[in-house]
Image (cartoon, rainbow, N blue to C red; front, side):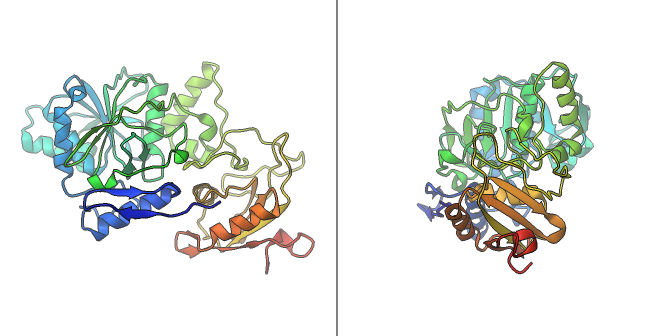
Length: 402
């Protein structure tokens, strides 16, 4: 069944999401609520961001009361605006402050290095996004880094410690990379800073092994120790990394080379892999792909032929055509939407130049369910068309009207 949306306000400070919503449902409703109730702060609108909020500095100050911060020497803090107060607190407390490089384009960390004799105003500047750019030194993979505390932003988090980010997966990946380079261990505490309205119920069914959990939640009014026992990521799951992602992140390539030399399995996710068994927010899935011997090899953004089923699985018998894909759409965009709506097909055939894709399901009932759930789906500004595909002998490509 497709996800059932249910979201309701309990009081002015706390929002709860009933079981059944997807991650994206939760994100959108948190963002909408923060904007409509004027809880959001610059930069606005907060949609598609880790949202800044009024009272964020007050929430950050609660970190001083945690024993884990008092004994911390080296702290990694994400560059998001609502965490600016934590970065300032770390500098004022003379902690070593590490900040991830934006989208990991030029490395994993920068160490923030205020000028000698920096006063409070200068430290405040160093804690801003501009200061992170102006007063930082790159930290290489071979540098000896031992992070005592990790502070991340969130869009939503539960009192159990389950976290939802903005959907790009960087916080999860950064943590996994830190594990791989030995910078953190399973006991390293993770803290998130959020508004009270971002503390919500999150269905456990939405969580996956690569999702980062948190140990402490700091809001303007509360300090929550989650007692979370769910294991954190134990390293990089290479089968969830696409070749496209690898190409964009040089430090990820370096880590892969290192683990490959150590004899570890570093096989990447193939763009044409089956979807079975995942509701991941990432554009990747583990598993082995059986491809016809004469099938063309798909490129990063084009999938002209469907992959075959895994061994022991039934071949698909029903197909859904998704049309009106935007010209800049990527396979990963559609995959993410399908997973979050819980209608992932057995196979997907990407027809990017024709602005459509074919979704192959086990039977007609599953295909019809997918058509129902996907009605009204948008990618970017484009409203997608969704319909059961015609038999191939009646319409080239299987799409109605094609």
